[in-house]
Image 1: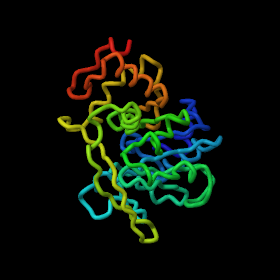
Image 2 (image 1 turned 90 degrees about the horizontal axis):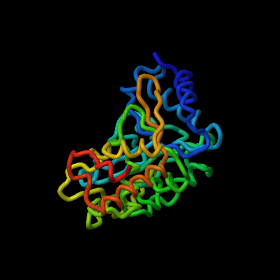
Image 3 (image 1 turned 45 degrees about the vertical axis):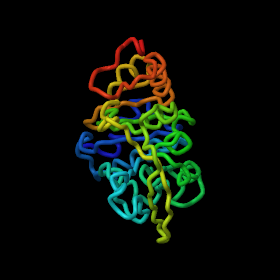
Image 4 (image 1 turned 135 degrees about the vertical axis):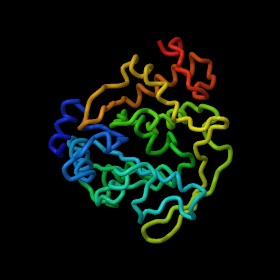
Amino acid sequence: MHTKESILNDLARMNAPRDKVVLVHTSLRAVGEVEGRGEAFLEALIEYFTADGGLLLIPTHTWASLGETDVTLDMSSDKTCIGTLPSIAARHPMAHRSLHPTHSMCAFDGKTMAGEPGPAEDYIAGEVMVDTSTSPQGCYGRVYDMGGRILLVGVGHNRDTYIHSVEERLDVPNRLSVNHVPTRIRLKSGDVIERPIRHHHAEGIKDVSARYPKYEPAFRLHGAIEDGKIGNAAVQLCDARKMAEVVELVRVRSGGIELMGDEEPLDPKFYE
């Protein structure tokens, strides 16, 4: 059985940064059994990644509610649509949760409680004003702006939501709905905010993110990935800016053609 201490040791062996913004996508099942379960695993992440002034980000998406329920994001609920750890993060007393109706995230600075002024609260500020799923002007874009990292724990780039933000930054066509759709955010006070957004949509492609692993060989060639292990899970620690540079390189060399429309691997000439 893994423990909080062994998780901390695994992160230290990877030399994962403690002073940067780190966005984590996790499969707890891949990690294996942890003493204290997901709560202990989250406490280890918070302790490690905020030790020297860093910020830990845990996505708490609710995009599955889009068009299905009256309220897309309920800040009084810990319900998410992307796994167990996000729900644990959403109810943590130190979680500063952003007000994005479909792609909220919880930020932890290791010091301030939810709602109190501090680095985590500053990081999520203004998220309610963005009008796309992973805006370069929002929380996902700030990972790039601040030279952050993406930590994939037991999952691949098909779960790497940050790549959506890179494609928004590069204005890749056919990635967002043409029209804004209505969403509603219920605050803990009970007040409701209505916020229209353009959501992820690619005409003719069922699931763009399922094809993002095609970028992995290019990321590796350009040094954007460091490998490690946490518990039983294989881990990729990815440099956000290097990833964006690689995606841009591929776009330029390919002439901007659609590369996510099939299962074929990327042509190496686009990135070597």
